[in-house]
Image (cartoon, rainbow, N blue to C red; front, top):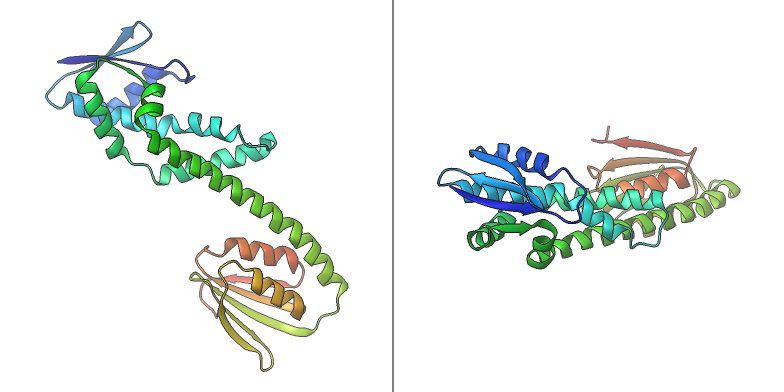
Length: 247
């Protein structure tokens, strides 16, 4: 039977409740008790250290990620509503790539030698690659949000241009594929097929064509969502959108 003290000086959480939840998931017998500056944990059985390491790994990577990401998000020069969007997106991205096995392995090595664990200290000094990845998630969410704003501003200008310009053709049919392939056709002789991963080329071409009706088949499975949104805003009132197979 072995025991440890788990503590946090910064995270505003019910540490005992979180520990109990994660330890119950491990299936190993345990006892929690009050301890000076934290929560005492006594593990029973030969797999106690391994179970505690897995539980603490889940607590760090799943439960406390939001606290660290929130602190990183606060560094961005954006209003609160935008920071909340970045926080939500970054936490979701971080959880999709979480590596509990690596965290558990690091914790097991540490707890073999030490009887006390400060969560934020361990995370910041012994899990720096994890923190770096979380920061990259924040930076990616920040960049995506700014790009969406740029798209929205550009869409406003292009929509105004479209409404002031008479249609140059009756209808254009656009098929979007997940690999960036775009297939374009009209009611006449126009047939085009090319790769446009950013979508800027296809938007420019369609604005130039100024069709009276734009039919878009999104076959990308959501991969071209940003482009579809931009087209919907630019060609508002002229666009018909379909997803799935071409009829």
